[in-house]
Amino acid sequence: MGKVLMIGAGGVATVAAFKIAQNADVFTDFMIASRTKSKCDRIVEAIGNPNIKTAQVDADDVEQLKALFNDYKPELVINLALPYQDLTIMEACLACGCSYLDTANYEPKDEAHFEYSWQWAYKKRFEEAGLTAILGCGFDPGVTSIFTAYAAKHHFDEIQYLDIVDCNAGNHHKAFATNFNPEINIREITQKGLYWEDGKWVETAPLEIHKPLTYPEVGPKESYLLHHEEIESLVKNYPTIKRARFWMTFGQQYLTYLDCIQNLGMSRIDEITYEAPLADNPSEKVKVKIVPLQFLKAVLPNPQDLGENYDGQTSIGCRIRGIKDGKEQTYYVYNNCSHEAAYKETGMQGVSYTTGVPAMIGAMMFFKGLWRKPGVWNVEEFDPDPFMEQLNKQGLPWHELFNVDIEL
Ligand code: NDP
Image 1 (cartoon, rainbow, N blue to C red):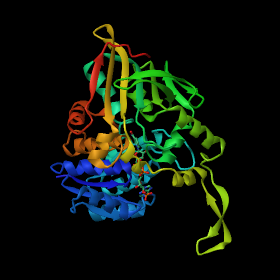
Image 2: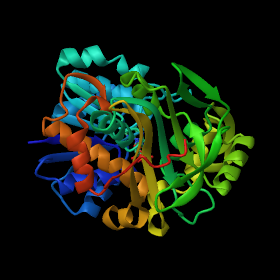
Image 3: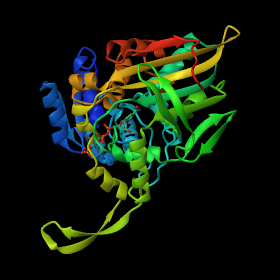
Image 4: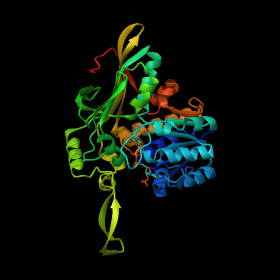
């Protein structure tokens, strides 16, 4: 018996909904709630299962969330809205006795800054309430953290060097588009880089460090060092790590557009005053506050609409160097995901697919009682084995390479 409420109705939520519906033996009751109810209804229509319930909720408002949770009484709430809503949803879960799962750590709206401290601060309250909170259960964070846990459990006595490598070798045939929520994506990429070395954080200018890395079935792609949230919890949970870094590929065209967006001030997240025509009397002007990046999101392609013309694949994995039985060894574990196959199954592209599938598997782990312990946890703190087994069954098969040149 698994009664689950999912919040959000975007690309990632659509994939998770398809996968939840495919695993009806685990998820017996399912509701999708989001800011715009019609988007939830469209997902239900696409899946073709009228038993899935839908509702409208503003997840910035704890009281609205509490009313919904008290009415539907889910055992688990899957947060696939935006990182801004993590804390309000966690608060409502505590008030209503629901467990919690998300795919991205909390970010304040007015500060492009993400770290786990805000959510880790809830640990004692979840413990005392006997509720489980599972943080960062997408692909990265998520599968990459579970890949690391699996490597630590089976292949290393000591992990010393960890490089998470994220390549999107797909082509959506648009001049410029982001693969998930544009506002969140651009905030992430335009930040300073950060990595962990010899017990401390090292900061870089945005996209300062880059080099070509070779990805399986893809070939060499220029890869850029970024700050990524899973590094923060992995170095805490695996203190033998001497260096941990995160790399992501970008094409030159993408970077040129990004540069222009920044130079034009369109990536700003502070409010500016704009004189706009009144909706019912366009000749009259009214001063409104807008955030340039939010305005940009409104004119960019919707990531949910990219799937139809997307070809190529993603290749994301962990390259690890460490010690096993007194000898140094290297290990590369990765998944390649085809955008076309993802679209055929769910109507969404590969980046939504690689995030939505792990979110469903994490929820499945919870309902099967395998990942259930009071407190707030990052995914590497649970047993990776049953999750790894499900990745192979649910559309994200993984591969291992031992003692190959991991280039790093
Ligand atoms: P979308 O922008 O496509 O979807 C977000 C959804 O949340 C929309 O349906 C939106 O509603 C809804 N929403 C936003 N604000 C509220 C609110 N206040 N109350 C209720 N609903 C709200 O995003 P994605 O699907 O691309 O991404 C979803 C999440 O997944 C994000 O947190 C993102 O950071 C994370 N992610 C994680 C990855 C990983 O590997 N770990 C990779 C990719 C994404 P509306 O449409 O009405 O605005």
